[in-house]
Image (cartoon, rainbow, N blue to C red; front, side):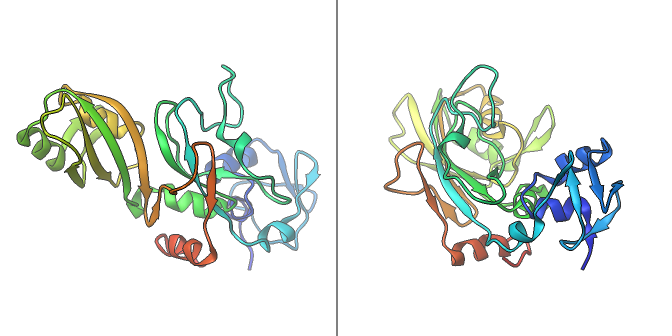
Length: 247
């Protein structure tokens, strides 16, 4: 069945819906030799061209969805090209015949740990969408005095510059007498640097941050930083089911 052009192309791994909407608005896509507009529908039987190049939708849409659990290390960036010349996670990923790898969300340059990468643009879009409230888990080392009152405030919610945010859970992970203490926290918001900003709102500093879980997927053990583990088909189905997709 025909579906909106940006959704069709996102499912084929050509980018996120938002990115593709911008491409459509710029007049860079043609359907059956007509310039596409937002709201147009199509399917794999149509001749679709981007910047003059015909898109092979059949091959991409009939290729199974792949997801990698990538172990990012500090100093890597989650962009395809970096003007500062820093290493990008995309150079470490396996080559694929059709489509391209898409990062699900981002980790800032100083954050390490689990990053999911997929070939499925629609899966990416849904897992990032705030309405699904996917749980993200982090190990965080905090410098400064942390007491029970502070923990309670972080659980109840604090006002940040972009609205109220909170942790869903906070667990002390080491000796309470250390000056740099480890905690495990969970949050359902994918907002920019929200874990660091929540702690900073209480006058303490995050000295190290590692994502250790995203939904049902845990940071892969036995994998070196810069490496990855591919999810099997059952794991991909479970991940897709969280966001009402059949994969």
